[in-house]
Image (cartoon, rainbow, N blue to C red; front, top):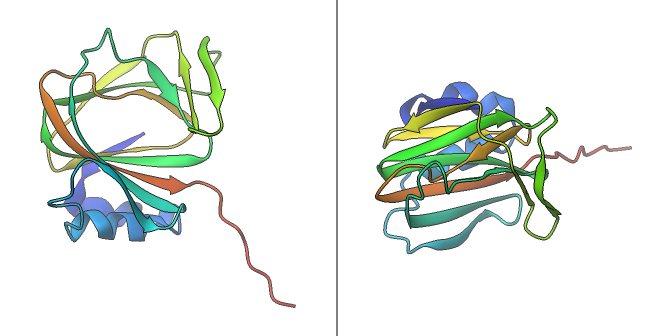
Length: 156
């Protein structure tokens, strides 16, 4: 998991070839004025989930993990807290992996809690189990979903 401000996102773009497009979407404010929902950025390779949700508190925010997508969770407004735990450890599965939704849930508690202030993002890889919306009050957030795998092109 990486936590940083959006104005410093450029340093993380080299980690994945689709990160630049995702961070550009955030920096350019393409999400401003959008209602909650799903919006394509680059088809199913990069898409945005705009949310305006009520925080659930720590007790009601289970750990989740994804296999196919990397999350960039950008907080626009509100008091967002997210729990974190390494997903490669022996976590106890609560709900088995659902490939249609690219999500699974765990019974374990997060190893740590991190506040994500407005203007900041959490970059979460498939190895990062996380418990979002663990704060209180309304949270406006944009979650960029980036397909983790990269297909190599070859010319012969």
